[in-house]
Image (cartoon, rainbow, N blue to C red; front, top):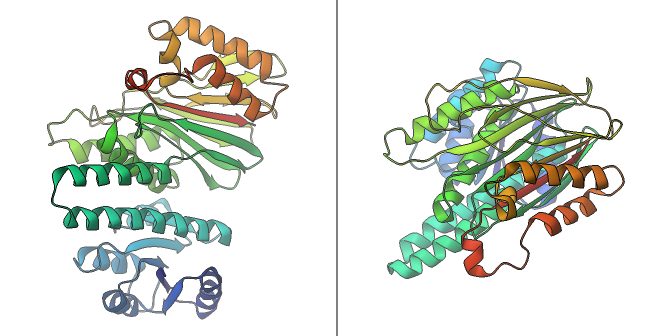
Length: 388
């Protein structure tokens, strides 16, 4: 049974959260002061701490830092669940070592889902570390690592069907190998704002799975802090570059970042070397590339990114894809690929369901009967359709 420590300076909040998580089946501990949080973390080693910011004796930021600095407790996940009123407070939460951040004005269902996701990744990582120590034979270790890398990737990148702020999203992921290098995320960023992040990392296999898990967590942590696409990409690039600057490895990632403003019916976006999404204007029957240029993440320390806007109307369609889609049959001929994709969206985009449109895209652009050796020559394919 997973053990959760709920830390809040309000007895009412403690009682509500306690009841919420207890009903799900977690073992619950509670704390009302920063000192109690640290002591109980050291004594009981909970799997996750749901942490407030303000306590009578110290701040939640200091509590988190002490927990993460202690070798005995540093692997305990910390989720800040509080009212982060300023950008500075969100930055302090990240700098203190928090694994995730969620504001209290979110629905409780979002909190429980985020906790379940964090615990799932924690268990997979723990299993990977434990099994690595137990197995001495190189081949057995490699087989286990591959299996766990697949599970980690499947936990982070999975087929998705959800609706946020009135927009419906349908996403599918098709790795060329068992472990691919694509990733995407669709997150609520606050009232009337939804973020969409699509990209791919260099390489395949275990290294790609680790990069995907890292970029997924970085994306979640930075999306609420940096809602403007250009600032978000600049921050991700800086963090990514710092990690691998002295490794001597050529590691990079491409990413397209888009924010949907449903109140003002605008799209805000920026790009770091990723394939350009397509926008279908159903009223005018026009398909437009959301053009934006930018250096891939991790190549230059101080890369700058564009901030672009685009107006949309209800019923319009957005189509995101990674470049593996165009490379199957149209490698080296992007103009023909784009022309064929425009024809398909104009033919099916206004009248068919999102499921039918994606089925048609796969039938036309994916080699569904490719041999295993042929798949090794292909890249991963990620597809996201959004009906605005």
